[in-house]
Image (cartoon, rainbow, N blue to C red; front, side, top):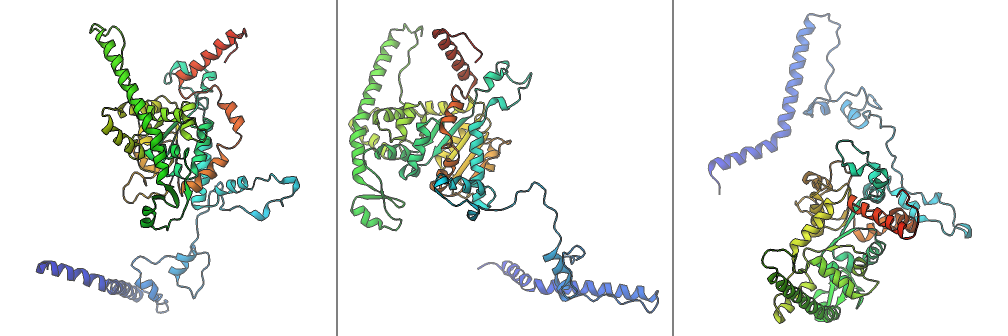
Length: 500
């Protein structure tokens, strides 16, 4: 129980709340009375036929603020209180001429489907209308535009600044070859579900440049190469599933035997990689010993990193359904700073009891991903989900003062201060997205939003896009190397050198 002072304070607070309306009303009445008295005094100096002050309506009296004028009301009628007319029917400012009008897709306006137009692309027609539909449909349409911009960007679109930009960047033929580097990040559930096939399409055709994912995003891709994931229901009983050895991921089901087959495959591979590590270290020690202690010869021991480990898994799986297979084949780095947070970690844990000493260096990977961001003239981020993959991708782009293009797709909210729910604007405050950027966040299940986005971006005119990006690179040094290789190829073929 509080002190008497506390009780008194509480009493005052309660009394104030209970009598607030009464006090306000009395104050308003007093103001009206004072105005009335003042008006009467003025009337004594005037003729007797002066009209008396207009009587205040109750609704005007009880308002704390000054009653609004109905001079600009769209409709003013004598029997409507002036404050109501002004508040409800007040005149609005004119909208700018270029303001888009909200209007969704009108399916009734589509031509009837016949044998002559069986290829009518209803999806594209619908998607084009989303931009002006409102709510998250508008954000979805904006995400399509943002991804189109990051894919089509070339350094040639940016004017060369004399005295500011490096002289080697001046040739327009070189600037036309430099494109944006696209960082693509996704959580493990995107691989557990059917989004895996969408992601594999992007990686197979080298449409993204860097991948960031979680441990589940690695192992679920590999596990599906041995056994499928099944459809279930969100409401299946967890106790019963546990007794049956079946794991639930939302409304998906993964039998324990899937993980057992993965263990049978990955365990000997880890053993093999461990042996390669030890052999490399033995060779390094021998070379270092014979180096006379003066480091006259370069010798460096091999160290596994998560990205090297993942690349090896992709090479070994040899399955074209796998995302990691295509990432390894196309030299797309896959970063996973929390590789041990899942089944792979379980296998490494079991392996450590049989043979301790397997080392994985995460520091080398943070250098690698940050350097990829720095060695880019523009970057784009496409992030499905939140948590580690979102922050790791954004933090790498912080090293270059932020990404130029960004698309978030998640259902996280920012009221709890989580990075998962943080808006793109918060990332701008950290320097993870550039202040000149126009990032987009789509609040939606990524399994709904992303396939729709891909249908209007990556999946459009694939062959033409491949021709457009052929001979391009994300950094000036890489672009110059491509030009040099093309010139050497011309010489080998006996072709006269042409401007490339």
